[in-house]
Length: 202
Image 1: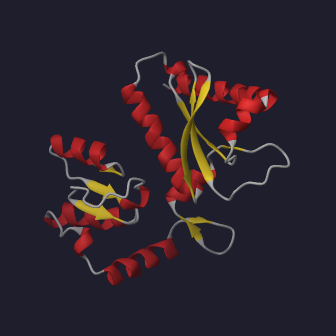
Image 2: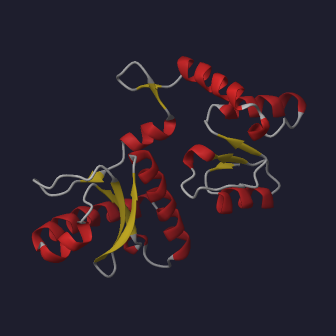
């Protein structure tokens, strides 16, 4: 079992007797002790873990490996596989996913603050809840996914009416919605469409 949410993924996997791997590169909770059998900083480290388990049983916990060796291994792997970023480098799987995430932009003429803000749209009550700001789209997308999974577990409703986490470049979104009804209407229309699409996938 591999996951980046220790309390859910690692605990759940261990309760079923599975080997567990904690993906630190997706952790948005600053987890210090995951409780997993292995901690990894890059998805490609899974290859070595699986190979070792298939060949000769459990290998040492990856966090115990010298950081220099881990860095060299990850550097070599990235030079051979990955997705081109357009600048001669490679994008991690998390960055590829983040690149596909929808970001709701601030109104024209409003300068972004350089952060990605995750808000929650209360579909049933037609209101917005404050969220968190992140320096990168990748981390914002990870938090958005975690929030949606938590909502699926916590809320009992028609899937179309579940709260909807979303990402916006507008630092002042909630206050702006209170004073600009046309902006609020456009945003809600877009989010209603996303909520319906999410319900169909469920």
